[in-house]
Image (cartoon, rainbow, N blue to C red; front, side, top):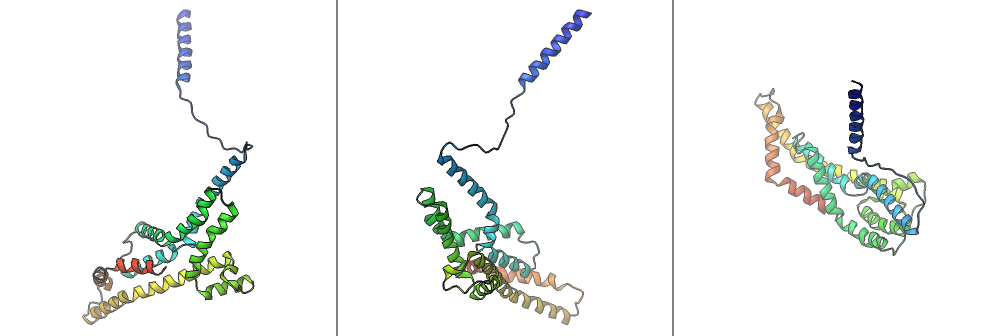
Length: 248
């Protein structure tokens, strides 16, 4: 009896040891700061830090410093004017706005790549010079779209002297002026889009009232006519063409 218990205890210990050995090793991830062995390692670390910073700020830069704001607002106004509620869905509108932004901003980004990114990657310029060269095409794009009235407003609010040239306008003044200008232009286009659909709604409402069908919602009758008008005039083609040409 005692021998059997000893054998069972030995087999149990052996099984536990084999099961522990059979477990796969779990990798451990650690993040730390070590001393750099050469200047190249410092440069690579700064590039990684800069890349992470750019990626974290990319959504804000896409919305504020590009054509995205005007495009997405105009597309939203178009859907509201049609009265189709969630058609096209938000994902489709945002995707279309993103790719139209890539299309309209491609010349600017090519200039940034040629003037700043590639020379920096070839170690021909420093990081400060690269940032300065990268900002110039973006500032030129914003100056082409911004209204002088908005720039003057933020110069006045910043309590700085009147600049004699575009180079004298600080970037922190140019960015909010550019955003306000984009909102003004987007709402202007949205108003123009609403006019033909508003006429259709008015005509349908007057017709229903004259026929004594006041209990019938005018939206149910006007919606097919608005969609038909939009399709016959090739509305999406006209809107995308107008948006792309408005940034030239």
